[in-house]
Image 1: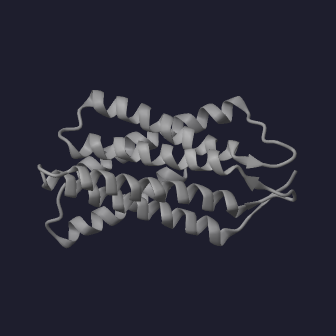
Image 2 (image 1 turned 30 degrees about the vertical axis):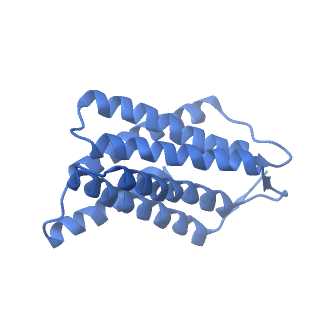
Amino acid sequence: MQGSHDPGLVVLSYLIASLAGFVAIEFASRMRARSANRIPWLIGGALAMGTGIWSMHFVAMTAFSLPVPISYDTGITLLSWVAAVAVSALALYLVGYGQLKHWTLAVGALVMGAGICVMHYGGMWAMRMDPGIVYQPALFAASVGIAVAASGAALLIIAYLKEVRSWRDVAMRVGAALIMGVAVTG
């Protein structure tokens, strides 16, 4: 079965992912700057970043058209959003509450990668269409590897860009957000 992509929606999904990355960088820096009362920043950042990642995913899914009717199970779709917000909370917690060490980076990347896969494949599972979706094990494994690697890269980028002291730092955050957009869409 052949499908087609809407290029405008593909670009929109990338821009949404990049915006979510920028928001993550901003919220993480706010959490580090305020040693007390970080919880509201963690919750707000997780909601903004998770919703951005989830929205990017569903915009990208709607960018792909198939010649069959497609609908989505509301409950499963909601659970995929919860997974995206939970993974975002973990990322912000790891980079907002201290030093990112090798072991926290590894564990964080694995847990975040798993959460991204739950969000992504949960969203795919929510699709109602006939014929159903069939996965190729090698591509499935590659997508899990990409999710883990992209999660590790996102954690490193967020941890590195701690403070804004100049326009150069702002430009680095924008550049990092664009790179995170590529990682998330990958």
